[in-house]
Structures are given as structure tokens and as C-alpha cells.
Length: 227
Image 1 (cartoon, rainbow, N blue to C red):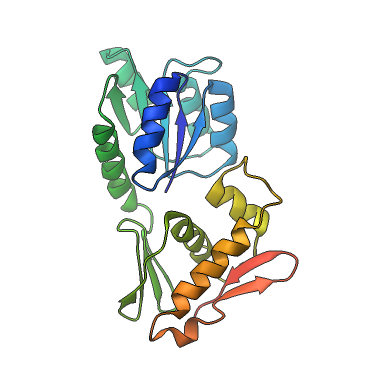
Image 2: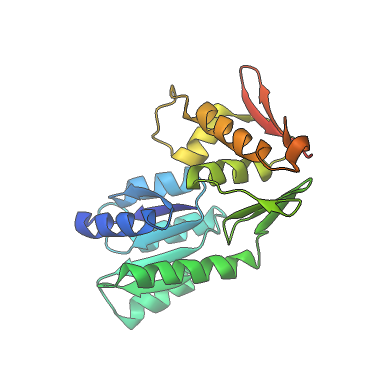
């Protein structure tokens, strides 16, 4: 699960990042509004957490702008100003929830989980490719009644491949979506992660047909084919 956090107060950003990472979320942090908008508009996230008071663009301006360009990612607004006007304005502009500082990270996590459940009603959360099923809410994978445990990165990579079956995805696309926009493009982490996923899938007793499901496309990337 990928979260964009736009928050200029470093201490608050640190405790949110730490709390979210313990839940196996991948958090991208931006400390000013201009950078936050750029990252939000050029990348895909599952949740966006926006502080209202930011240097550069404020949180409401970012929210208005991303909704205008068609980004419907669930948004939680954060602010130190627990005023009715802020809450109403933010919700009318398309925010999905609102949390006033100070707050416990457990409450933020509970609101994220609730938003994901609500959003699941409008977005497919169980992905099926052949006999392989991926439940994005429970973070589980099933193949003909058997399951295998994946790490957060492995799960996100497999989910990305399964959302575009039979489509070749480049290493750059996989790296940007799963690891983040600022990751070293020369790294081989994609290949290493694919190798681990293949090994886990083929370890299933009934998964003989899964051998070769994730195909290497020479010089380009990978493609997942139904089995």
C-alpha cells in the first residue's frame, strides 16, 4: 500500500512515517506543497495525507488541483486548526476525511483502513489472473486453495503486475510504482524481488502451472500471464 504524506513539520512526519511503516505501508514524504503536488500528480498512491498549512501550495490548493486533473485517490486532511470552516471547505473540495492535530497514529491508521474499505466499493480489491487471486484488503494471495506469504514489496510488485495481465511493464515502471520516484534507476532490486516471488509461487504444491507465469521480456521488463 502506497501513501503520500505532505507534511512540513518534521517531527509529525517522522512519527507518521514510522507508524505507517510498521503496518507495511510504503510512505513517500514531501515537506512542501509544491513538491507534494508534483509527486501527487505524477505518481499513483492508495492514500494521500495532506497537511493544510504548508510552505508553497497549501493542502487545500493541492486537493483542489489534483481533483481538477481527475485524481480520485482518497485524501485525509491534517491541520492544527480545528475549525469548522476548514473541515467544511476541505470536505466540499473532495477530501474524504479530516483529522485535527494532535492525534494518535493508531487513529490515523484506523481512518486509513476505513477509507480503504469504502474505496474498495468502487475499486476492485480482489484481483484474479487465471487461478491466482490477490486480496488487496487482507493482503493475502491464494492459488487453488493454497496461500503463500509475501513481503510488502513482493505483494505490491505482484499486485501491479496482476492489475495489467499480459502487458509488458518496464523495470522503470515497476521501480517507480513499487519503490518510489526517487529510487536509484540502476539498481537490480526489481529482478531480485521477481526472483523471490517466482520462488514462493512455485513452492506451492499445486502451482506447477505457475512456473513461467511471470515472464521476463528481454531488455525491457516483465509480464504476468494467466495460468
